[in-house]
Image: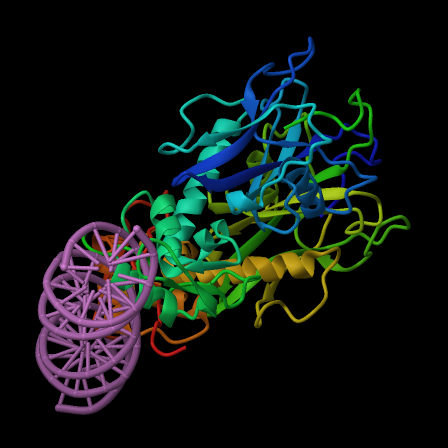
Length: 241
Length: 241
DNA sequence: TTAATAGTGTCTATAAGACATTATATG
DNA sequence: CATATAATGTCTTATAGACACTATTAA
């Protein structure tokens, strides 16, 4: 890695930040969590909505992921969600305060699990429905582009992995699982094909109990290995293009 | 993003670096470029091999990718290879000099295109054959793990995209293309299936001319859209597992 | 008994794997 | 003509899509 362009290490360092894209499903629609930028004098993008995040605190954060988890827990109260690194964005121009590089993570979690920490509410937060490749308004910094990347990543991984399963709580029915896939993909998913796909991939195992409702009760399932994504041997929808 | 943990921005910033994992095929084997760490007194990991990289220079580098391209050109002379961000690694412990975050890119290019800049040769460089998930020796910093991630990414993308095609020069025969896939995947690839796969995905188009040898001449092809990866509708080898 | 949703079955389409066969150049 | 490799063809297999059909509960 190193070999400084200067002989000592006393040259200007960029700012280092971490941002988190947090997805959930509310009312059958994909939503993303945003925070409102402060309105102070020297603040960039005052009053605009942005991804939650902030500077890395080298005293508190032992690594980037710990920093991301901290920010996630602050906003949602959730401790161990599905968390994956999305990438990093760094340039001289993305923040008027100077050269910054941000490390972006994306998390996906069930809406029922969210209990925002009542302490840390200096900043206003909001859940915005995802429409197309964004939320239909411009965000602070380069967050519009980052969010678009996150949405694309989420959708494309839904085509060949079990990612959307993390939108559900521990046990769920196959219909519910099929439904979150349909929500994320933005199109209907065939029941029969979906079930064989999920079962033959060994994604789930039966849990005790059934979910009752106004009709036939549905078998409950849970993820067979909740720690790891399952990869399907093909993507959805190879038919035509 | 921001909202500083302190009220001003005058708190310690991590170091920001960029590293590049550069792959090529030499003698039918995948190789990776490494550089030797300097042996000075205060240098971490003196004399060990490491990924090429270094501090971001906020005067020179307008963004992270420009920085990666700069480092790539310094070592290989290549200006516009296939370059993709691999991820970032940042922690308090990965470099004894302090909290650092590195943004890692990976590049893949034809061996024939490489002409290392004769100027910038303070550091010794070497090409190491990839065996399994590494090169069979420990690298400086956390570069062993980073290299492993890069190799995994390269192999897994070879299963469903055209990535290995960037190991070839502008025109190539289908046999040559099949061969680089086999080298990257580390297993033989069936000719017939490979050809229909490549042709029906619209990955290549015929170029003028043929490549002659000791036998029947082979049609030359080129990438139809060299700027973008092509995605295949399925991964290779779904058979058994 | 009807409505609603769970769960299964059947048939087709797509693309890959295995492997055989044909084509065309050189020496 | 022998050899080597290019290029194509045939048959099988795995899994998805479309959609019909059966099963089981509550009201």
